[in-house]
Structure formats: structure tokens, C-alpha cells
Length: 149
Image (cartoon, one colour):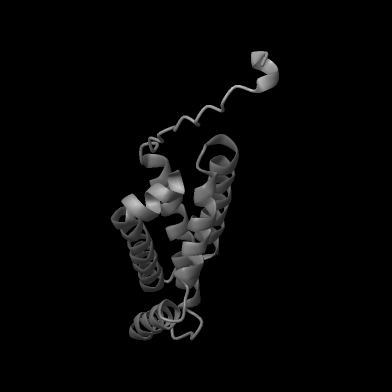
């Protein structure tokens, strides 16, 4: 029910969560490049948080069906359009500063795959539980053995 609700009733919120995740990761990556900081620490913290949140969602909530969607959307954000764009953006920002390494943009790609995963899982936890309507099954006619006929 949660997956159906996100894909059919809350598509705008889902799209916004993914777009916000990619935007935040690109902004954080550019800030990191401009300040000439190492990305290893924040990536390890973010990866640990992502795995912990995935475990929490899987074992302690009824939102298990969201996990596949969240991780797939994280993989989609590092597709053939986003990766060259983010790496080129990182190289351009690095070239304008003191860092001319061609590998500068790759940390931003890592962020661009993890932050949307977290935001989709947090979105699913923040949305109210969908209301499911239970349908009564039609009753079967009485068995001849039970009715005594």
C-alpha cells in the first residue's frame, strides 16, 4: 500500500524528494570543492546513516516495499545524464579555484546517489499510512454435508 501510494497518489512528493536530493548533493559537493575539504568523512557518515535507516525501515516499520524504490531511485540519479553533468560542474568549480584535479567531481556523484535514497525513505516515513479498504469475500453456499441434506 505504501509503494502504491507513493507511485500513484504522491508522485509530486516523490519527484520533489529525488530532485531535492540531487540538488542538495550538488550544492554540498560544490561547497566542498570551494572550501577544499575531504569528502571521505561525510560520505562514510552518510553511508552509515543510509544503511541504518534502511535497516530501521526494513525491520521496524511496515514500509518494507519502499526500500527497493528508494535504492533504485538512488541508482537512477547516477545515470547517463546526471553523472557527466555533475562531474563537469565539479571540474569547472575546481578549475576556478585552487584544485585542478580531474577526479574532483566523483565525490559529488556519490552524494547524488545516497541523499535521494535517504530522502525517499524519510518521505515514506513522513507520509500518513494509506487507508486500505477490506472487501468481504462472498460467502459460499452451505455444504450439503453440514446442512444435513
